[in-house]
Image 1: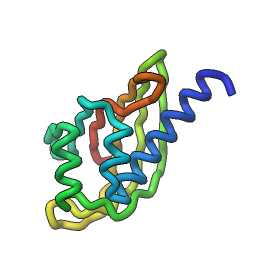
Image 2: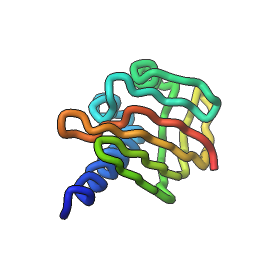
Image 3: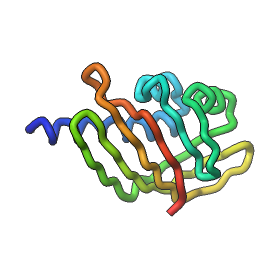
Image 4: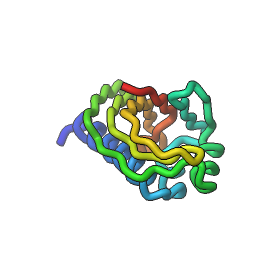
Length: 125
């Protein structure tokens, strides 16, 4: 496996671990997959820093029941990358459960030899 293939594999591994941690409610693992200044922009446009999002997950405001991946595209450029993933998300958000066709546009940075997500923007598709 060449360096580009290795980078792509590591980013995809982080992305899928991210989704798995969301469904498992495992904010400790999720925190390790994100940069300290990670932010999530929700489909409503609300900008949320990492610690606030994780605290709301721990508090039950965001409960992810299932994520079914549909498509993933990935562009790696040196020590940065952009991944666009589409999936169906079964979640309870602030007490209302629904299934949404979500698209995450995620930026990754190579940090101390590890690919970490630095930003995520959620939209519907």
